[in-house]
Figure (cartoon, rainbow over the protein chains, first blue to last red):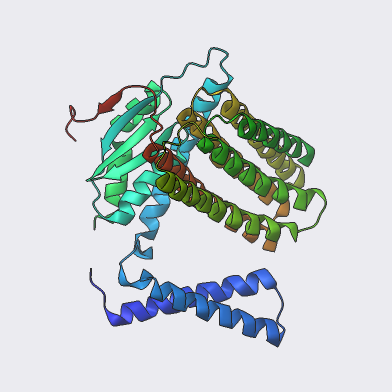
Length: 165
Length: 93
Length: 109
């Protein structure tokens, strides 16, 4: 991973700013004591985060912002569609489920991308990521239709496209 | 109009509680507890507006945090326990 | 305008409430553990999103909306993580999902 010191310092500053904004937003008070406590806890959090090695790895950076938003829009449509499907299945008196476990390929190799793919699969009702290893994701599906949807590999392609420049 | 959501959420919490009591495996119970927790977050958010007390939103957020950490902690506890007892805990207690 | 907002928010809230309730019913009706997770995730995604959007419309542009957005974002980030942890813990403990195993080997993408 490319890790320029200046980039690291910028990310520390970014996190610190974000935490302080959150503190002020939530407390909504500007007494010196509370502000000092806030500054102290923000600094402590940043220190602990640094110790945990968070800044050593390149994570999913904000430069993918626009693409991430269009991915979210697509994911919302998928979630809506499969929610209606699962709701229909639950309300059907015959309970027409066909639970099955499938294995799909994760084209994206970066751990963060694989986490995004796995979480997207789980977030969509009717599909549940069980395990990831060696570029394969094991998925439990509630219905045949959900499994077929995932097998088409569109989600995998879209996640892989997030990082391409 | 908030009453509809409040009642639906409370009913779901009762259903989750029923699942937690029925089990049968310990994972079903953890799932039900997690569901109960997220429904509590929704309920708190709705109640904040039902009674016009926005400070309930802070409670909702705190509850969301505690619920998530709690579920992970319970899972870790079960795993350790299963390791030390070296029994297959599929069928709960 | 206010009436329109009220109607939209009422619709979101009641549909969200319906999804929450359906998910609860599903968690009770489904036959085994892994299928129950699917029902529970229905309440976590659609239910939570619709209900919180419904309340947001009532709150308008205020600090409450920002807090609600934070709650929603947090729920959407953590609920799949919790489900994953739950499912993989159950899998490790030897709770087998029912149904056959298939792969996508046959199709090359």
